[in-house]
Image (cartoon, rainbow over the protein chains, first blue to last red):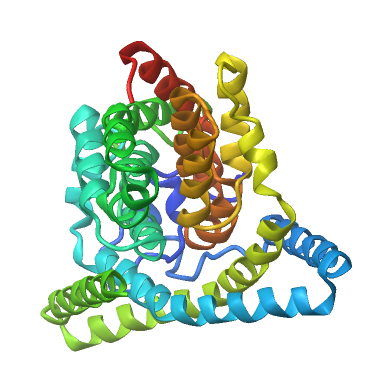
Length: 215
Length: 166
């Protein structure tokens, strides 16, 4: 998939949202890659959703006329405007975290060889992380950049989405009720660690070279 | 409203605290990190825009009754499978997903099926993958994470069946 990258110890660093901050003491095997923005251009994912949106909008237009289309547009534009400042905050948070977190320490405690402890740390981190998707995903990308492996980052993202208190308190409790929500969370408790472990298990088999510990 | 305010305060409070930590490493470091974050933001805005503005249309053409119909009572493992597919296909934000779950419970959907639905929707709702995860994170990671998450709604349903709750 990314065969043009040398198989270093952090293959996904090259794919990460933000390349390591400029003044970073990068690992030696990164040295031949100058700090640059590694963001992929708008890919097939965005084209796919673009097509989906156009098709859906056309269906709405044929069903509800232009008024239906405009009503949804105004509503979503307002939503978009409301989200933007939070997205900015999330991006800044991700960039600052990538700068502040000590890379060696992160790769030790959340890296490929961090074991169960790394998965548990990722899970705990995801469970206490404040904010919505605008925080969780930039922070997850930052973790990948500073040396967390797929397993620990999966544990963090899954924990945020399943047992994070933010969404449960704000939306699930009022809509689905206390009983259902609490049992749903209890049942979900083991999932982040299991998903992270499964991710790690699959990752080292899919990408055996990149999972080797740095010598 | 006040919940949103608290979220914003916590969010910007965290940003300020981290900015301070970065600033202690030097002004230039802070400026470069802030520029990095702002560039991320500028790059992400068009994608978020497409997703947010587009999601209204996608939600409008997927009737909720279709989704709740799949979670019927006594649907067993087939119902769980349908719930997982429905969870992945559910568009929209938290209100939509949880509301559909609540409706499914009200019309007699089995709790294990609804658990599977909510967990599947939380883990890999297709629209959220595209709207939120792909813009922010490496696409390889997003698809990998979604793929390894596949078994877990089934596990959650099995646990719910085993303990007989909720």
